[in-house]
Image (spheres, helix red, strand yellow):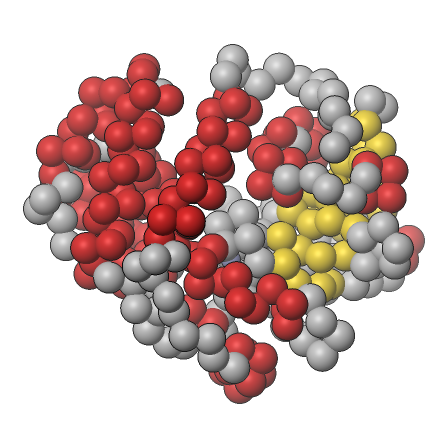
Length: 275
Ligand SMILES: [Zn+2]
Ligand SMILES: [Zn+2]
């Protein structure tokens, strides 16, 4: 993997923290595969019929007790990785026996995030951090759930009407890669690690596809990371181009270490249509 220079300063330890978090999640996946073994279903048929993310169409059978264990282990990991917020993490720790995990899992998977926030508030917990720990404890489970479908989602037979939304978990994606041989674009979901195809000259936000209106910028130090922007809706999409960049890159980390591209996009008046 090439070393990519970062033209803006990220806070000290920021990137390392996310690298360690991802390693922790990888280790969790290995452990969890012994207790979480979702059945493989016909995802393409389900997505064609229902036009909504797969996980919202069925019960992924994530056991509350299993999720609680992951959450407790995540908080333990975070306490050593983020000493500066140990107090807030301890507040959450103290509530872990009382939380309604059934409701938390259901609300999170149905993307009813306001319910997660209400649970935090009613338990007197810091809401933003609470959401972060729920989100990141869920990820190893989502990645196990999504893993069997990797090949089908990038195959030629799959077409998806909602390019910015993960067809597996429903999460919004702001990151894509362009493949070496073909220049094919794949969207990447940083929650469940799914990838799905989208057209190259195409705005994932508004569907606009007039060639002259979809352009890209890159920063001087790095040609592999690009910002594709749409003239029509002012939307942007960060992209890792494997052609100059090389094939093996960690897209989760690539998304985080290119925060400078988000800043650049916003500075130039573009948006990812999130806020
Ligand atoms: Zn996903
Ligand atoms: Zn657009």
